[in-house]
Length: 201
Image (cartoon, rainbow, N blue to C red; front, side, top):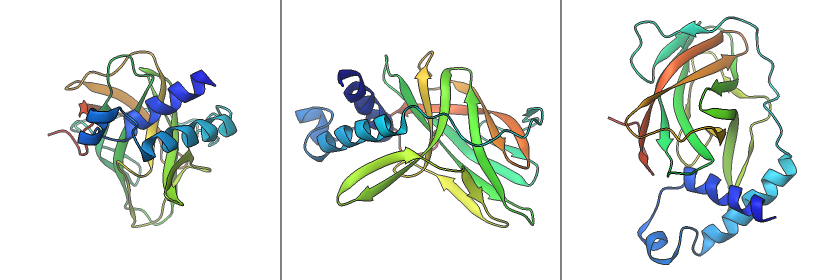
């Protein structure tokens, strides 16, 4: 139970930016204490499930000529991808991006891999009865034809788990995204300062 509580706290620390109240009274004062406990329950229910989407088997494509945080996989454009900096010793970190489908058929972001994390999951965060709930996104992130989908702080996100090392603010890390139809694409994600709320400039 102690390990679950610690992991819950680490997850929320990766997702929620520090506030003045938190600095004064502890990292999960007031409602955040309940949030951490609830995330611990959700993790226990999830049972460490790995991503359930199937890979296409397509070879990973390099993001040739792409700037950090941007790439293209088939009809899917990836923009503004980044990793939020995590404190030293953290076991998790969160990533965000925007997907735009220029094709005539839907595609699905089914999963991801990163060399600095033991596994990567797609997570959603919802508010229910005043409580923040987090869970794996069943079936992946659907990107409809002509649609733009954004994974952003406070909402859906990439969760880098079992970190083998904590990404350093200012560096760029390699992440491979797996799409159902477009295949796999590798791109470099810049790492922001700890607690940042937007793409690092």
